[in-house]
Image 1: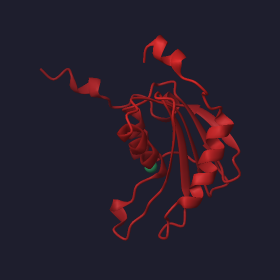
Image 2: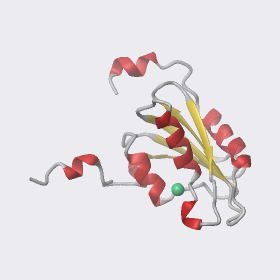
Image 3: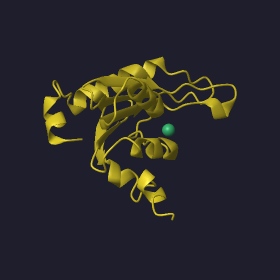
Length: 146
Ligand SMILES: [Zn+2]
């Protein structure tokens, strides 16, 4: 993202706002199999916030995580980059994104994007994306094949 695009974003949410939204949207989770509800809220480069929850299925492999639900909503609405994301769950520990969600995030975020990883009460720890997925596989890794 260019510097000018960055400065046009208004009302950048703070970490507490994103965490609160992640905690709240967790209540919409459809998790009858794991009973582990997760919520996510992200801030995208189009200035909008997108939320998501986990949606499970009787065919377990068809389940989608809260983080990817929010990412797909953002990208399908025209966002190009994710600038920050908060995740919350029913756990008393900070909610760590799974490996698939880390990989999907890597397509749309910078290495220094902050993640606000919360427990069920909204208490959170901050990580950079690079801390969660160092040496990630990216489009550029496929360019040196000829
Ligand atoms: Zn996941």
